[in-house]
Amino acid sequence: MTRQKSWSRRVLTAYCATVLAFLVFPLLIIFPLSVSSASFFQFPPPGYSWRWYQAFFSSPAWIDATWLSIKVGAITTVSAVLLGVPVSFYLARARTRWLAEIVDKVMVTPIIIPGMVTAIAVYSLLSALRLIGSFHSLVLGHLVLALPFVVIVTTAALKQFDTTLEDAAESLGANRLRAIMLVTFPLIRPSIFTAAFFAFMASFDDLVIALFVSGSNATLPKKTFENIGYALDPTIAVVSVLQIVFLMMIGTAWFLFSRKSIDGAIPAVR
Image (cartoon, rainbow, N blue to C red):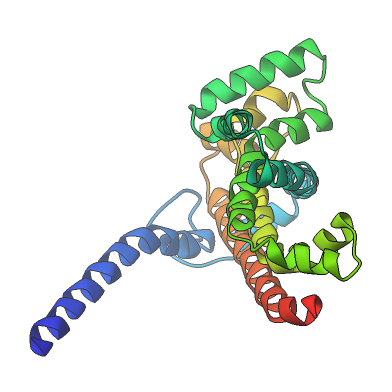
């Protein structure tokens, strides 16, 4: 029985390793392509050069698109957290369950229906408000994508939260708001960081809504998409590498902050 169990574990490990390699291998190819000396995509590269990194960092169009994506992503993330966390409290603690169920279904709609349908709806609304082509249109459009992730993650954390801890804080003299700030938030802070991470990813990686509402502005995904049509050179591989590295840095920061929040949750409650 032990031998059979060991054999099954090895098969499962080999299977997981195969799936992981299938997912990761295409990403690894991007790295040598970004330092290729060729003037077009060629694998393996005929030689190696930093010319495409120099082309990216010396291009105002690429730099402006990168900063625009970062700024829109940051503002979208903060806005999604500020709006989504109160909604999550309502969904987790509402007494009128049928109304909470309706609100819950509406909130997750943007990640259920096709992205093109969401983009058309956002475009129609922002066009009526004459916001197409503005910075605000990108933030509002991406907020539609990011908000559901915040609501889903935070609501799940609040539904598992033991509300008797808040009751204990109130019995010691704290009002409801103070109990939430000093007891609830420290314990669900890792979930809020996770929600913020997903919100930023949804904004930073979006292409469809950006194509509809950005006008002459170009986010990084939109700029990449446009370049594929007329200049398919290794600069796009450079952009991909930088995106991977940047998102890995964001993910690492999220992991460290989440661990720190978990470690500091109990002392914060005390």
